[in-house]
Length: 315
Ligand code: UDP
Ligand code: MG
Image 1: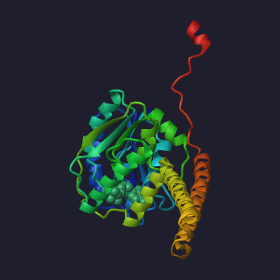
Image 2: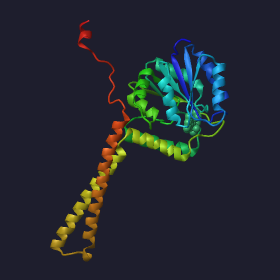
Image 3: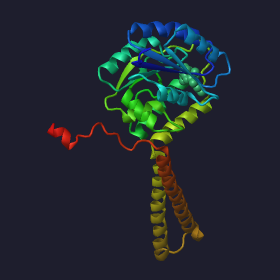
Image 4: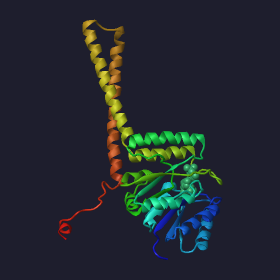
């Protein structure tokens, strides 16, 4: 087999019901591209017949399938990370196994990468999820854009294409809690977002409970922003400043008019001031923690496109 040009990465977790249909649809499309490709299937600790099905697909579509079998459930993003780390292609495409992302969209995404885009993001047209998921998602997308300074219309859609150089950067940041689309967007130089179709999950159930969704969103928020922490510090400083003014006012009032209702408000002013100071202290501690987190994450601090050496200019 010659070196694949395109690597397709599919995380699977208890997807025995969806896999046969997925394979039936995706392989003809990839064959139709007429380029060398590989499909990397990651088994994220499934407890059903997922692994045997993956192995069967490997026999049935020889030379095109690689399987990574996790020894437990490490989550969708880790499964994709493992795939990206081992993918050989110049172009990587990720998609879900449940056919909510139609494989028919792949050729369009390949064309976008051919056109020079290093990250192809997608926005789910007429998203087929519950009203709750759609509303929550809209809120989260907007909030996340605000606090991370990124701009993505749909963080959750995992049908995405990346060029090798962006994936190299992603691989370099050995993060344990991460959110791949945001990471890619951060390091992309020429990203694009396209509309893609979205279908209902036909077989099996969503692997995300409400609790897991919330945890995932915390990964996204803490991974890409210190704004929540800074908000605490700012609130602390603001409360301290206001209470200080209040205390000063009470003090002056006491000198001129005399004590108010047995000094209750003076007491309150002092209490508020102390509270403000406490909140500021928590915020400041948080700032240190945030910096420690940035440090241990080992994300590349900058990315060089090219260095123009002196000798090169002379040639
Ligand atoms: N997935 C995974 N590990 C997990 C959860 C999900 O590999 O712990 C895979 C799952 O098999 C599917 C994709 O991630 O291919 C998206 O999961 P799901 O469809 O349940 O998410 P939703 O569409 O509800 O956001
Ligand atoms: Mg799904």
